[in-house]
Image (cartoon, rainbow, N blue to C red; front, side, top):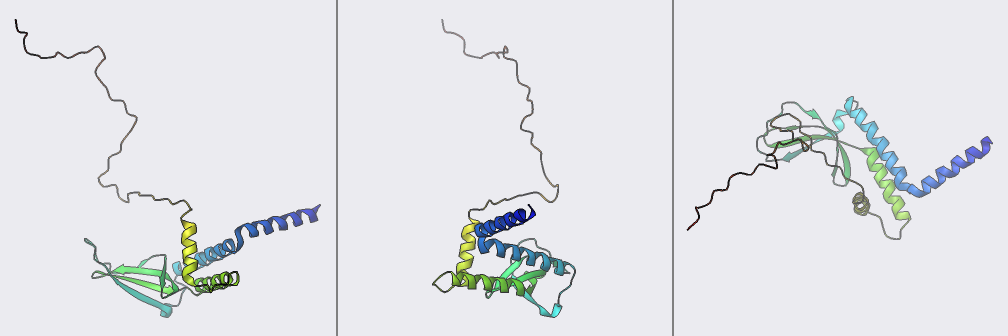
Length: 181
């Protein structure tokens, strides 16, 4: 009895892998890599000498300079390499972003490109993989949530409130010119 359960679990895993394919496998590996990298960066467990600072000029009204760097999370692609954002600050109309090269994410992207090339006669390139990823994202639901951070000027609207009105029997007097005789 126990052998049949193991065999059925293996077949279910095989069907799941066949359905998701390598995309599901790589999605899981990328998710694991992201969790590990974020944890390392949150705990400052990285080599500071391996970081780079990107300086991006920005013109935004009412920005204030920040003295210290603020921890941020995100991915930037620069020259075909994935860079993980570590921290940022705004100073004198320039956004300073400290980034760290994500070796594991770059290696996973390279392996994905090699697998795509093995299934096709055409040479795989990084742009094709990005285009297919963007195509898949068109069919996934997007959620946009605009929640105010501060209370500020807000008015709560109650759509089902009772508004008193005049009774149905009330007819105001109609003013009209006097009748001509």
